[in-house]
Image 1 (cartoon, rainbow, N blue to C red):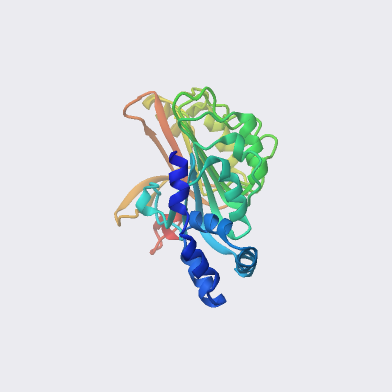
Image 2: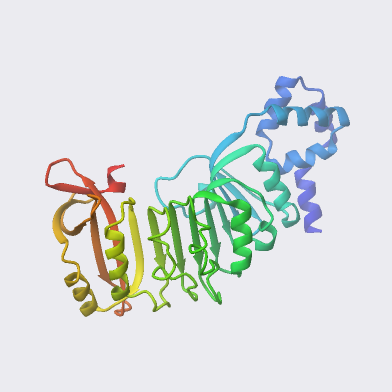
Length: 340
């Protein structure tokens, strides 16, 4: 009954359809441009064959529309036309367009969109993962959010192989997930070739270990962030060999952030085993100048290094390396993303 009422709401009166069919092409195109997507789909089914051909002809003439992000959550669909300056909250009033789609028609709708738009980012939050596993789509960044659903490593690989982001991958998995959806061989088997930024955050069981998978040494990543609070495999002592190998690498690395195991004593020992450390003057985003620890790499890069203890869980630390660039005066540095 509810679906019938919804369909009736999306249908326009027969008299309006007749009026629409009689419009000149220029006016007809302008009207179709401003009708919501759901009404257009319902209206097309009401049109005569000749008018239907006009609709299809108009669609074929339209140049592809470029947007920043397509967003799917369950059976909800939204889009952002322009990039955001900060983190998006996905509130309804932030979207440039938003609608609820019958799950049966969701993939068909996406197939329809991919022929008419190009987008930077595709965000999938608690969708029907089986449904999206066979969806062919091109984008620069893929975001998968797993909260109320379960995404298996096998299904994730199907989705990644079908959508194939070219630059960025972000996976967020929280709640009662039995395992993290990225398989342990994801980096070792070079699936991530070409990606520049990878973010992995979860409170489930970590299947990806930054110290055993060749994420930082054998890939082209310039930004990597990993946050697994329940994992005890990534330690400050374990990071030391990785840094020593990476130190001599010629590859540019903009940022590395890892959730690691280590108390205050381990942190002091960590610093003691990095004799290359020095202090630099760092210009912060808010304008303050602070003294910060930094490391000069063999390729000439200066990177800021931070190890902070988690105040809630004193056994854990947050390890971060950020590439620094020259500031407005000779003895001053800024984070690379602050200078952009």
